[in-house]
Each structure stands twice: as structure tokens, then as C-alpha cells.
Amino acid sequence: MDGPAGRPTGGTLQRDTVVVTKISWQKAGQVTEPGRYMLRFGWLTVTAEDLAVWKQFPDALFTLVEIPGEAKASEGFRSGEFRLGTFELPVGSRPSEP
Image 1 (spheres, rainbow, N blue to C red):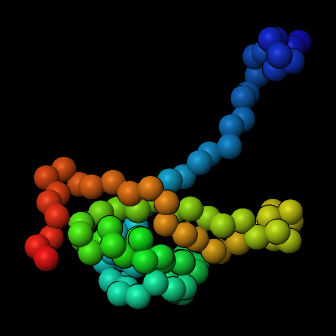
Image 2: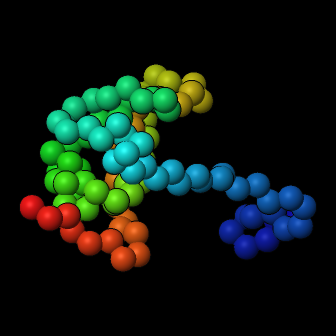
């Protein structure tokens, strides 16, 4: 039997699980130049803006955002390509000294 908006009622509701992975500058190998880097989990693209955040806040944690690959995504494979998304600062984090 269907409920509101045609959603099934009762039974098992399956949801896609979203895993949010964060990465620190240390785990990114303390890169110092913008570019594309091969890490354990895949390729990471780091921009000059990302590096500016890490330079000012070395303890900042960025969210890894997967870049979908056209052919692979349609076949259900992960692309292995990532960029840095939003960042958070640990409690008590202070800007580094210039």
C-alpha cells in the first residue's frame, strides 16, 4: 500500500548512505603548490584558494567532494577524483603567524 506522494508504507525503507570524509593538510601530504595529487584514496585537486586556507589555518579540515566521472558514474563506479569542499576549524584554532 502506498502512502503520501506514492511512498510505500511499512516495510524497509532504504536510504542512500552519505559518508562525509574530511581531510587535513597533514593527510594531504602538506602540499605547497596547487595541482593534482595522487593519494591513497584517489586523485585530489588542490587550488590556490585551498592552500591559502591551510596556510592561515594549518589545522583546518576540508570536506572531500568526489568529482563524478561521466562514463564511470553511469556504470556505478566511483571516479576516484576529488576536490576540497567546505572547511571547518577545530575548536580553539587560531590563524598561524605570518
